[in-house]
Amino acid sequence: MPDISNLSSEIEKQLPAELVDFMRRAGEVAASQGQSLYLVGGVVRDLLLGRTNFDLDLVVEGDAINLAQQLAGITQGKIITHPRFHTAKLKWNKWSVDLATARSETYDKPGALPRVKPGSLANDLFRRDFTINTMAVELIPSRYGRLIDLYGGRDDLKHKLIRILHERSFIDDATRIWRSLRYEQRLDFKLEPDTLRLLERDIPMLDTISGDRIRHELELILKEEFPEKILCRTEELKVLPKLHPALKGDGWLAERFGQARQLSYPDLPSVELYIALLAYPLTGEESEELISRLRLPKSLAQTLRDTSSLKAKLESLADPELAPSSIYHLLHGYSQPAITANYLAADSSTARQHIQTFLSKLRYVKPSLTGNDLKKMGIAPGPQIKEILQRLHEARLDGKVTSKKGEERLVSGWLG
Ligand code: ATP
Ligand code: MG
Image (cartoon, rainbow, N blue to C red; front, side, top):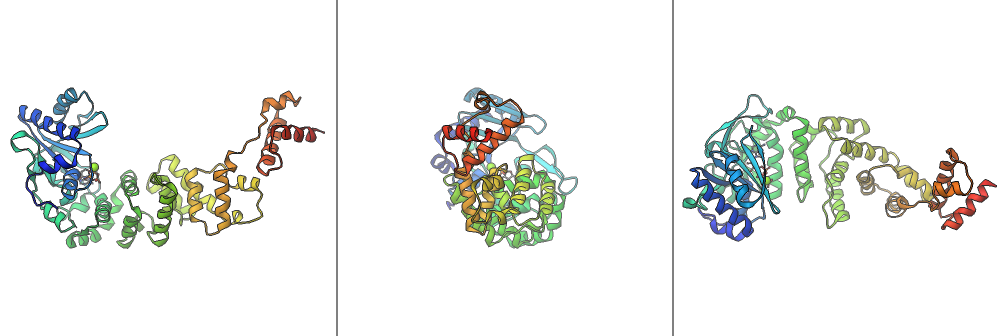
């Protein structure tokens, strides 16, 4: 890691030219308005670590919305403003930058959203989660590139430590418990010993966090490169069981997550697939408890329910004598991630093979004849048409018929 107090050459080397130009211009505009402007948070940490990160977070000592409006003119970008929070998001070309007015936060009660008021840069950095995320870089021309490190972030980066800023940090906001383990495992750091002690002390505070906020943190974990490392660590520290006591961050999960990545390559597995695997050991009733704890949106909740009811059918799917039409009926109607999760979790190789046949072939099988064709053959509109189409579908699935002509012969035969 570079031991430096000015990051301008890191910025130049590691960020795309368009963003570098943007930051210089932004610094100039801020200075001309008599405001101070800083690059803060994750991107500063990652510049020092040499990790790719183009998510710029800017803090303005002054008025972020006004600055964002000026910059929207210069970049010909669009802004979305949140006057209540004094923040703005600026988007142009493929870039997106967050601007926030420096603020201080206080917590009325644990787990509640903070009360926010304008403050200094030091206040703004002190409200953050870990020292490694509290560094800032000056952007106004006379001080461009200067590193501001008020809370020992660079030292902790050097020693690979995740450290909270004060003793009540996890009490104020217990989502930081999850966040700390996400950074620890992503960066291959360690929790600093006092932070670890306070984390263990404050685990009961996880109950103060709303379902939406916990779900958000879980989703962030599942978007990491190796989510299983984080989940295993949350199990070790008894954080995962607070989400639901039947969840397991173990070797089984690690293996399935790895297989899910192989299967999805070159894409990453969806959050849905990962959650279905995470919830796999749960009973139907336990899945419902998890669904309500995390306030899962409808489609994710459906995936967990599908996963669980399909799990109950794996035994039937393991029968080597199953006709293709039976395989079809066992699997159709379930969400794709639920089917894939069961494919990855199934012990029986026959069941896996059947699922694969369904996914690659059976789910696409359709009769060639349509309802209209049947009407033209003289069948009266009504329930009989539906019934015949279903029988044709079965015959197609089981390979008893392979052409439109064959289907017509079959139907004629049925009609006598
Ligand atoms: P990354 O996006 O790489 O995970 P980041 O540092 O950009 O890291 P974000 O989640 O984008 O993280 O948040 C931006 C900044 O906001 C962080 O650097 C952190 O300092 C702060 N932050 C986010 N969540 C919290 C929280 N719950 N408590 C305190 N500070 C937070
Ligand atoms: Mg970020």
